[in-house]
Amino acid sequence: MKIVAARLIVCSPDRNFVTLKIETDEGIHGLGDATLNGRELAVAAYLEEHLIPCLIGRDPFQTEDIWQYFYRGAYWRRGPVTMAAIGAIDVALWDIKGKALNTPVYNLLGGKSREGVLVYTHANGGDISEALESVQKHMAEGYLAVRAQAGVPGVAGSYGVPKAGKPYEPAERGLPSESLWSSERYLNFVPNLFERLRVELGNDVHLLHDVHHRLTPIEAARLGKSLEPYHLFWMEDPCPAELQEGFELIRKHTTTPIAVGEVFNSIYDAHALISRQWIDYIRMTIVHGGGITPLKKAADFAALYHVRTGFHGATDLSPVTMAAALHLGIAIHNLGIQEHMHHSKLTDEVFPHAYTFDAGYMYPGDKPGLGVEIDEALAAKHPYQRAYLPVARKLDGTLTDW
Ligand code: CS2
Ligand code: MG
Image (tube, rainbow, N blue to C red; front, side, top):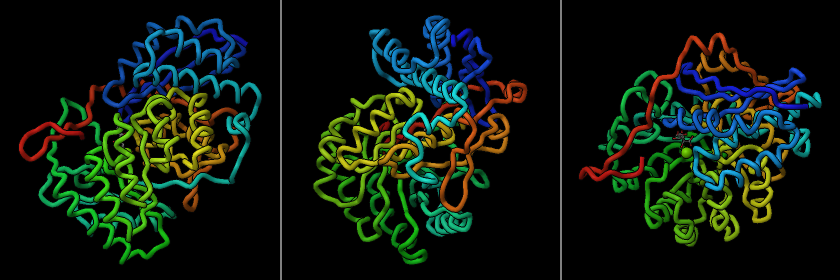
């Protein structure tokens, strides 16, 4: 089998997505997600100008060699643009392999290690009562694990707080908006949120929380310690992770489990975090980490150190990435949990998919390949629009991590 064509579909059904479609001489095609939130067209250009010309004529079954060709062959390694482009190709090729062999991708990755993938979804509220209501609503929908975020008093637009009547979606059309941040107010507030949730909800539901890279290691250590009585499933991205040693300090002070990785694009971003056992969950994004090929290796490496997975599953990743995460997650031994942030109805219509949710778990479905398609006619009706994530400033005006 040979790759005869590859092209990009850039669309915006409520938010921007870049999708790679690879076609073969046997009429089988595969889809890869190449979306990098707020930097979409950089990945599209990388693919169009630099990778696609080298892809034509290759055998789509050679996922390892093609991955190495683009990773090592560029000379310039890593970075989210490069790795998203390579990841989109890799995922599309696994989709083709599954379709050609008439089997779901998970069967090519070791088969099912479990029947369903435990997922968590997002609860958000302007204050603690709204957040509580939101968790209860998701529990009523069947979720067994819920991430809870609430507005911090005196900090307008804290991470995870939705605009009235809308689901939480950080990227906005137009230039980046600015929000305010105070670690002091946040640290004083979060334990109150989780105390209330445990009092009202009891001990069974898994509760998670995303710090979104906003604290220093010692602040994160304080937060983890103060949340211990509420036994979170995890505390996510406690601080920016360029400095892997920073996590040693957090780890020494708290037993609250730590998850990190949604902005990583290589296992080299996490090798010390994993091998020194400073984290409990590795949360890389399938596409930004370079695809299924390197993520399978990263998961197997993590398994050696009792680190489990929690692949990033925000709405800025298309249903193709969601499917890839479910196929990989159901196959690996050390699945922890999968993030499930609902796509809009329109996004789901543009990307019809076989995966389903039932009673706290997601199922990849049994279609050959990844089980996701794209309605190109509908996609064409929703063209790309420039959008950005917000930036954040401290109360004194200093730019800080959003
Ligand atoms: C978040 C993301 O899903 C998460 O855990 O941290 O929503 C993140 O803000 C976006 O993916 C950024 O594009
Ligand atoms: Mg996050």
